[in-house]
Picture 1 (cartoon, rainbow, N blue to C red):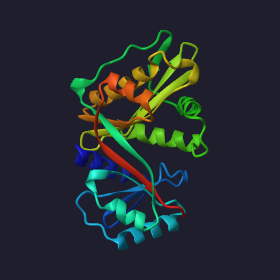
Picture 2 (cartoon, rainbow, N blue to C red):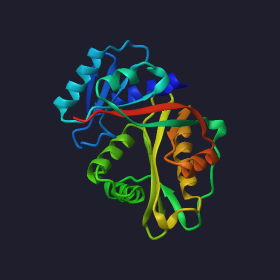
Picture 3 (spheres, helix red, strand yellow):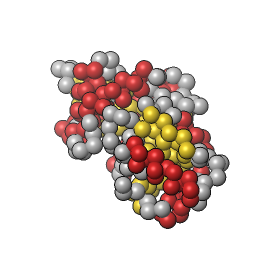
Length: 252
């Protein structure tokens, strides 16, 4: 499963507005945002990596005006971390990822008074993004206009965007999933505004996004939990631990 997830990550990076392929690495860049969480690289599984490749990657990021950063499944490039650290990179985080297959999915009930809906206009997409940003704490690298563009672009390519709204039309949470690559898709951005938490909405959104993926033929959905609370939510939906990913970056 590690190999399949890593291949899907690399394939997804190749759909970014600007793609840089340097030896063993594929970098996906977006001119609409400087966020390092959007602009990053990942290694191609099975391709040998040398120190010179990393130097070339650093130079490519510098030329693009972006912070050198990688995300990857640890087991698919077991020697890469040492090479990156030797080149001045520092580990940001190590996360365990979870997966779900169609037969494991548990569809969770939606709290009363709320509906799930896929945003189909930019104003609705902007409202979902605003709810997500509020839930995540309005981090400085969360640029609403760029996020709306990415959401629309993802939907046009078969990705899922799902929001939760009240009967009055207020969007209170949301989540997304990338367009599938080789039957695999990443679920991300599951967020609920504070007043609507602890009512099962996070689980309902997670299950709703995942079900839509499976309805479109996806075989494996995967995601990462940001803490114990979200971990429990995802396990309730049907996700189980499967492997580990590394986040590592270098200051410019």
